[in-house]
Length: 570
Ligand SMILES: *[C@@H]1O[C@H](CO)[C@@H](O)[C@H](O)[C@H]1NC(C)=O
Ligand SMILES: *[C@@H]1O[C@H](CO)[C@@H](O)[C@H](O)[C@H]1NC(C)=O
Ligand SMILES: *[C@@H]1O[C@H](CO)[C@@H](O)[C@H](O)[C@H]1NC(C)=O
Ligand SMILES: *[C@@H]1O[C@H](CO)[C@@H](O)[C@H](O)[C@H]1NC(C)=O
Image (cartoon, helix red, strand yellow):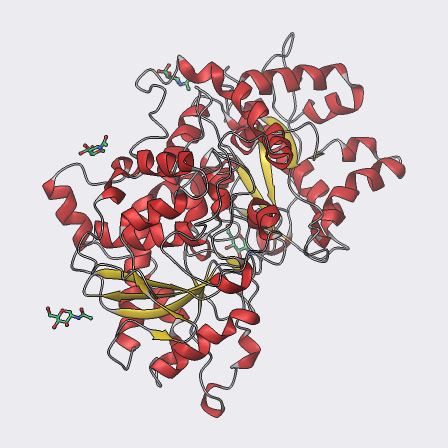
């Protein structure tokens, strides 16, 4: 969850009177400090993660310690000159959506006044904000909120947690990676990006285009049904580790390309039939900073207790929420991954889908750049987000889908692959010892670890509205899961992230009605950013964090060497 990641760090406020290239000139926090917050954070993910992947060392024969943490961009860089040329000639698959999202400015264009007005939203939008200018292929950044929120977070999560630096340095990394990958293809732009958990420009401020001035153009990490923010990928997640998703050697898996490969290979031989036939969900249900945001999650989590209280233990057993502790990397031990947003997109959708289980999403209001490409009933199952309907719907649909699996197994349409993960095997064994939980396995086609022949089943399938099954599709759940996985692998590659950014910037620039120049006023001004400057900031206060980022993105050392020298006194 975005807020989790930096929530703790956000609490610390620092106000800087003098801005120098080093944002923490006077901070000399010793490295290796034992931070209780950091310890708590790690214990919840890292230990679980590390244990659960050690078994993969043998299967990933072509990998070694470091394969998933070093030189990350090499995994998506074109392998040769021909491939490089092909990538340069490619267009983003999301170009239509980009154009659609930019519609509000189609007639008026984007003026400098609009961009400056957007930069004044810093006290309305919740997060850190930057003004970004690309001029002649150089990256200029003005960190607007630097003096308000402390800007660069002082890494309260301790050394070894580069993500605790917040999202701004990763956003800069994403712009740099785009410029590096598409030299000469990124035009001059002047834009404002805010990095909050929530979108900020409401759609209602604009409807009735003719009558009103266009909204302020603002990039953020998501778009939404009720918002006009332009989605920009949050590289905290795309370019970095995700909640300590771990490789088999216990190191964080850096970057989405590596994560996707690891998750696909981990589950390549584990048939959906053999996965735990429950609808699982893990996540935050209470955000101290934004108490109102997780309502639907609390409803869903409360569902299990309600069912049990009503004497419906077998229905409750179709759900699996909060416990046992489960790392994101193990979520596809379960057949169904529930997705519940919380007034914002959740960044783990792609991981939940790519490992091959079925995504069951409560109707969503927010999207990342790619999510609108996934169709309900096509690449995932969509259920109502009505708090009064959630519980019964998830139970009924999970039961029906299990019956479909059971029938397909009985008829020989689906077969067990005979492989599981160690964690999955243990969990199934536990389920078989518990009468209520064992009832879920009956008839759902799970054979892994079972003694004796599986029971003969052939349950009739419920047929819902419009000729579809209760899960809102004419397709079978395993077909939908396979479509979802294919969609992510083919359309949500790291190259697609970069192509999207490039084409968003291009489309934006065609609307610009002014010549881009470095901005500056009393509040501060934009600085030409080299990779070295970025690394320096990643390395403050913990030098080790800069080393991690540099090992993952070695090209940063020389990127932007053409920047004019930054004057010392500003
Ligand atoms: C999946 O099966 C193939 C073929 O037997 C094998 O080469 C590969 O290592 C297996 N993958 C995993 C993760 O076990
Ligand atoms: C990173 O990978 C690229 C492409 O394979 C290679 O050219 C480069 O030398 C590597 N850099 C480091 C520091 O390993
Ligand atoms: C960009 O490049 C052009 C041509 O080389 C040059 O005239 C212009 O001054 C440059 N702009 C900036 C802001 O550096
Ligand atoms: C039926 O399922 C298809 C996908 O298979 C979906 O496109 C369509 O909207 C569904 N119809 C209804 C009435 O839910």
